[in-house]
Length: 287
Image (cartoon, rainbow, N blue to C red; front, side, top):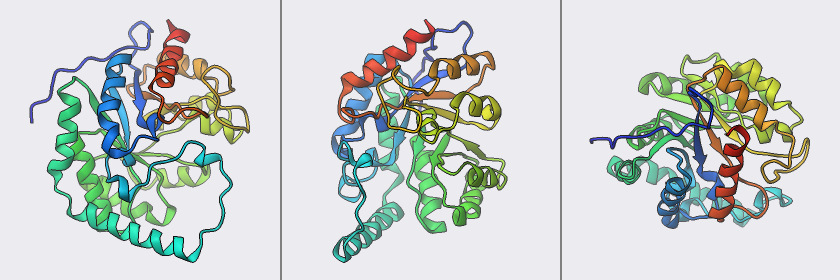
């Protein structure tokens, strides 16, 4: 498959190697059927080249229900027995789909981006629970043309994911909530890296700038989100994630990876205009 010639828009710094991209979680309320044309349109309108494509924009919508706006902040009630049974059936159907879907399905998605001069650089996966399923997910990611899979990895599955990364020679960027566990897991494979989210760290009362300064050499990408310290996501520029300082530091170190705009505060999820505001804000900080 011939790749389309690509451009690399800078963030505005001279000689920057840090690239700005879109985390498609920013448009999480769009179902798989409607999402891809909108994502491509937004990337072209904002001049973004790379994206981190989330699993719900790839896998069938009926197996990955659309995320309602406000879901993450809603109180979580214990599932009923009927809900547990439905969840088991859905998970089994998703596993069957992953084990049987032809790789041409993912190649067509890759083609749709490449024909527009765009690239799926990371695949944000919800990993399965068996060696066979995880192996197929690595094949899916390679068919999408990515340079890494970004995912949360349950500690008991660390060795399984490490074996798949070694087999397929594909970077795994860890999305994490437990820093100590993640740092233990990183030791399991030379293909393991971090994919920190500066907004989520801020919510956990972790100084994002200090964390990035201490760990940037172990990172494969970065998610840009603003949040109140110990609180919720907020519009870019209204929180405590120290976004400008983080970007300036990474530029000084000439890191070779992408920073992904992750626009997830209340009111987003479907709004392409909010994504454009977030991109514009990031660029204004370093123009």
